[in-house]
Image 1 (cartoon, one colour):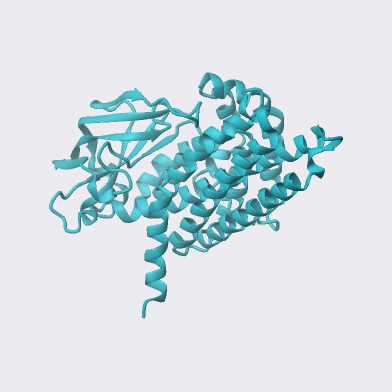
Image 2 (image 1 turned 120 degrees about the vertical axis):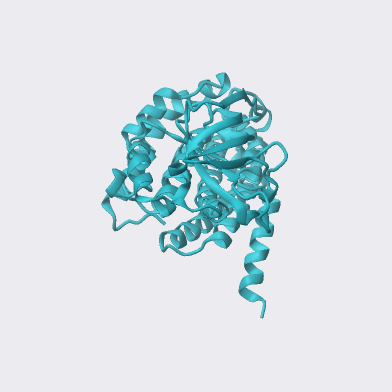
Length: 385
């Protein structure tokens, strides 16, 4: 839960709620339908320090807990899920640099990421490798004092607006298993050979740029190898994905909460058969179930965040939170549509946006089928004698 003993945590969650109510909700639907990048809102988020939440004060960040981070992401997603996605890749890359980067890398990248002046993209998925990370084909070959990187990446969130790209690639093509030959390398925007080939048009998750990247003989100094040691990339990325799954779980809670709050407000206003529809048993029982699912999902997200705050491995907890929260989000959004009836199917209400955004959470940061595998492997590690 939010660290209520920390005044800064309480203040920032309260300020984000005010920001969402006053600045985001009045414009989100219009920006989303136009698929317009929310530059003004992003600038405000940077001024509020939201890009620096999980970066320590040593590098200009707020140094807030992941528990507080989860609460902030929930509030942002309540207003517009895409804003939480813009924060996500910055948080993942910032975490990985702070946890695994060399001192020079931390001093070079973290202060600018914290200010929100420059933002990061996280590149993992490829045209022929999504959930199967071991199948990536992007390679980095050492030539003197630099790497030469070749390959392609897909579904890169913030890909057009990023200033840094953390790229998972193979530095040893012959490693067995393949994951032992993977490394994470940071590429700066404008580097020759790094090209955004197209922006991907999506069902939902609008306003946030999702692109395909091509890397053609991209030369990067060896000093951009995260941590300075090859073969560590897979472990670094898996740890970073725990942060990403906390983000996605929090997003799911936020979107579900938004759908529920819109639906229950409507249920008091809409009359049928001489009384508010809330008073009909089918409706108020549905709303009770929606609320219960949201509360349970939030507790799972908080559990994962608290374990991450303790510096403990949290793949099991993050996987459970992401799996459960994203699945109930889909259910709650559909139940909200049932409550609105025909109006929910129109673009006059926000419900249709929630309906288009929710499926992304089931497949983002590792599909839910993959989450089940992650959970099962963790259970085997814990329970097998």
